Length: 451
Image 1 (spheres, helix red, strand yellow):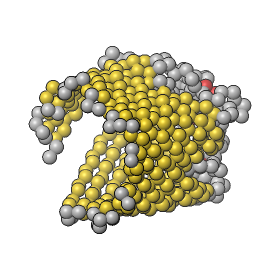
Image 2 (cartoon, helix red, strand yellow):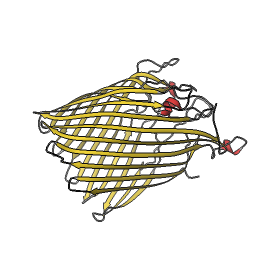
Image 3 (cartoon, helix red, strand yellow):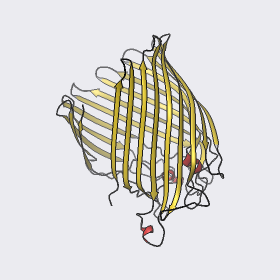
Image 4 (cartoon, helix red, strand yellow):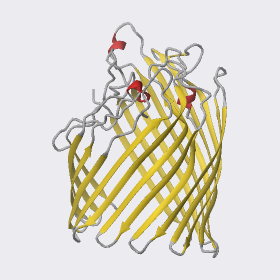
């Protein structure tokens, strides 16, 4: 079988109701069939999703009231996972299906003001997500231990937010504040409902040394509530993999950076240190209540730069490095490395504009050996790799554009993600976990028409 078939359609309409009022409508529909997951226990019979958005924008209501924006959005996903295509279903064992659906809708109101030469934004935000799942055996519904995989888990969020940006001499100060109240409920009477309240805040101060150089310092706090899978998911073996009493994760972070920009160069370097409280982490080999809260730190460095060699040639560079450490190893384990912390990676590219809006590009991507891992929870050492990608974009007219490209020119074997247990990767029957490599050499083309 083919790995999958996918069809997508997107449409956007912007209507100028008046000179200062605009209506924005958008819809995106995706239809995917027979999606094979070689690293998971099931395949998707199909995966259908829809996204709708309605937005109304009003500018310049008064000298101080600069903008009013209100947006309503809705999305849904229908995603039955099944064993129908597996060898296990060819014999006496039944076809098992975990039919998952989700829908989410929300509304956001944002007001922008100019107050004492400051840009001020205040608003309200609210959303509701429903996540439901049930099992079927040979296309007939059945419940595991009298329960569903996810029993109508509803997440309702209400928030109020504000931000301010102001220039004071050579300084720019930006600050934001958001308060969230989130209720998560389930129809499974054996699992508890949860309520979370969180204050999110940040402030960034930028000092413009001169027209070309500036430095910035930012501190902030943000929260993430656990999702329905982490809280409530029940496997087909009647193991409650979720942990229904998880706390929300709180991230407190400090960023320090420097930026340079002139007619020939553009560069940015940033370092960060993050303290994670109650980070949601999964423990390998645990059948019930596999998710738990841990405390950890993450720190790293990011660098990006562009060199305008001529009017036609741009050289760009980007690199990122990060490390994560648990405060303590999980019970019964010794490894304190945080999973999913990719090693040093970077990209160097050259873009040549040979005609108006027509370019040739070559880039090299590289990664260091991934050897700082959490092997207690499924990760393994991954070799370093280097790739070459090529792309050409030609504009026949201002309306018609053709793109041709080839990625991984030398057909290298490489992997960009590891085998952390939360990725639901299969084992080979022994201690080794299946590593999914990224694509080999592949060609692509795109023809676009704009009007």
